[in-house]
Amino acid sequence: MRALSFYKYQGTGNDFVMVDNREGVFPKDDLKLIAQLCDRRFGIGADGVILIENAANADFEMVYYNPDGSQSLCGNGSRCAVMFAKQLGIIADKTDFLAIDGMHKATIKGDEVRLLMNDVAGYEQIGEDFLIDTGSPHYIRYNNNVAELDMIAEGQSVRYAERFKAKGVNVNLIQQLGDAELKIRTYERGVEGETLSCGTGCTAAALSLGLKNNVEEVTLQAVGGTLKVTFEKADNGFKNIYLIGPAKQVFAGSISI
Ligand SMILES: N[C@H](CCC[C@H](N)C(=O)O)C(=O)O
Image (tube, rainbow, N blue to C red; front, side, top):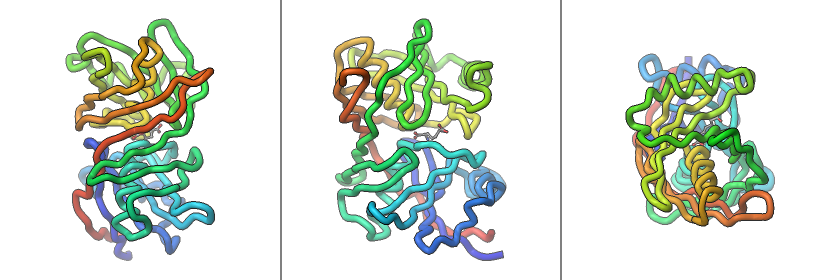
């Protein structure tokens, strides 16, 4: 057994175990360990694990794992990784870092991180619903009262449908609160449950509202807090997409692994 130092961060209630892995000692192929670290009773408890690693042509690389060990882009996790990199002294208040979907820029102002997402080229409309990939795939469904819905049942009905069951999909229930404001609940693949917020999901939801009307700045009320997304329409999709919101350290610790 050895002691693993970690930091716990959260971005609007989407929470992560953060590890400084610049020495490359974390056992990345140990998916049982990742599941255990995320377990809210037998481990630390989190929606994912994030490693900060050295990168040849970037300030750092963030490596994200869902609790089931699968990997994808994590928007809130990226924002927390940026704040963690500042805490480690790797960056000051701006950065160019590498994630699974390529390079990202981000800036820090107080406890707020402004993350440049990659451009979104295209989307699919399925009846009244939308399928938009913002670095992770998101199914968007509008509803008049998302608070009363059974998120697990609604989420699993889509996530395990024939089309999505192999690779999974994140499922977002959206309620329009105003011309440029949405309420959002998210069932996340790889967590296989509802999270209090999903950054790539909020981004996809904001873009779907941009498709429905002419806004280019959307406020999203997630269960765990408020995020803002700004964007510009492009020929076949969207560009200059920013995910903006708080990222905070909750505690630091050490766990025997
Ligand atoms: N569960 C997602 C990745 C994390 C997304 C979410 N935590 C975010 O903030 O974007 C997936 O496998 O597609």
